[in-house]
Amino acid sequence: MATTHVAPQRERSFYRKLLQHSRTLHTYLSMLAVVLFLFFGVTGFMLNHAEWFGLDTTQTTTRDLPLNAGLISGKDKLALVEFLRAQGPVAGAVQPFEFPGEGEAFHLAFKSPRSQTDVDIDVSTSVASISTETRGVLGLLTRLHTARDAGLPWQLLLDAASILLVFASITGVVLWQSLPKRRALGFVALGVSAIAMVGVYVALVP
Image (tube, rainbow, N blue to C red; front, side, top):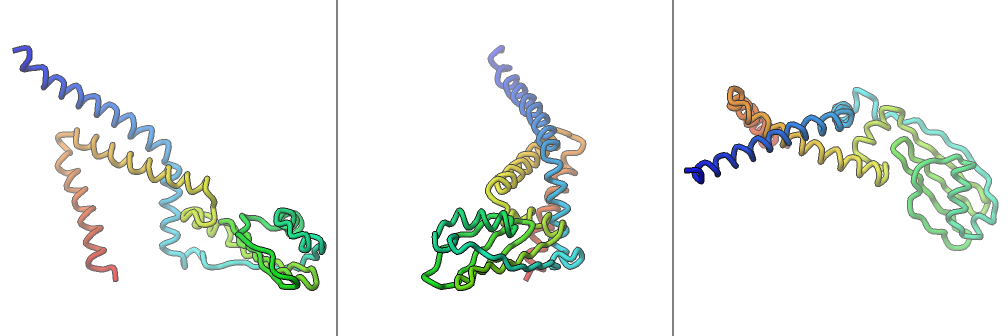
């Protein structure tokens, strides 16, 4: 008889531990990521209604910067980039570029979520024409949402937020099904959500 009750007891013990760990994970993962969820919720809405927030509006400034001829003839990429950063001044990650043939003009680009700077260098006059396009605070926030030109660390942060959201969702479902009086209604809501998403895509998305 004692053997008969071992399996059910183990199952109940496993189930209690599963609920306990799910509750702990759900609580702390949700609190850990709540700022990220809020950020991506707000900026996602803004991206969906870009015209409401003027996200396509940019401000462009231009200037000419004399260069030391040695920066070009020496073909030292680091020295040229650091000079432009300090004297331009320009910001953002420099895009790959190569020095041209003798006497040929060439182009550099610096990109960040806040701005994009294009530098056209006239070798014959040793002058850099610098054009910087900025997008304002809202433009910065929405570009951070997409991780565009934000670099690897920010991309990893977005990956972490996605993983947190997945685990928070799974543990939320586990906790909900543990509530007998609300279980059925919860799964109906889950089903309606899934059907609505698929239905809108199939029926209304071109």
